[in-house]
Image (cartoon, rainbow, N blue to C red; front, top):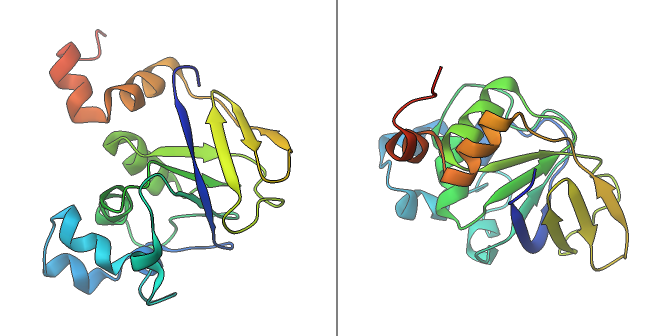
Length: 166
């Protein structure tokens, strides 16, 4: 992961965070506007969470983040809240692909020693915890996925390059 550098506060969740925890499916019937949806981020887990998010915050979770139903809006709401990356031990396949396709950085790494509001710096495959001084290594991305992420998602990538050059 070269070229991607982010820093922000850790907002910590546990294992098996499903898409209905991220945003309940009934909310997508109200609007698909990310600026409207952002107020509902994790409302079923903590009704005050969305109001406490600052642009640049980073979601940190355990294993199987984004499991459950395949709702692309579960990525849209995270991006709408100004969150550019999710760090987790593992992701559901669907959430991972939706994240890449929409320009949300899904970082697989050991998150067990990251605490709520720790200051993190993601630089390539290195995640430095400025609060504790610890550094962990993340998995990398295939070249095409990195290019999609750097473009801001699949649609901006296609607009820029026209196709995949296959």
